[in-house]
Image (cartoon, rainbow, N blue to C red; front, side, top):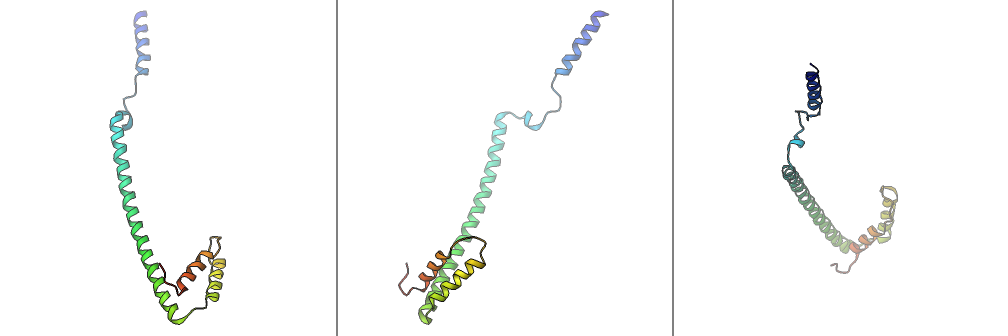
Length: 123
């Protein structure tokens, strides 16, 4: 009986050392399968990013077209009616100081206004 107790005692630690029968999905996959899945996921993300970037580029192009058209219309109006550039500059400075969250100077906006108001041909 002593031998049986040793055998049964020896078998219990072996069964405790065996890996659990339930494994996670990642543990069951080999490295090649994981690489393929990761590439597929990255491909989907890249496709989504490409679509988003295309949409944003189209929006920026539309904004640029609107800005250029507005500048040209304003140039014609200024050429026909004149403009008090000092008053325009003062209004630009006032807007920058009170209505913008970004702390910056109004010099770029003033330069744009001067370019629109200039009687010289642009571009």
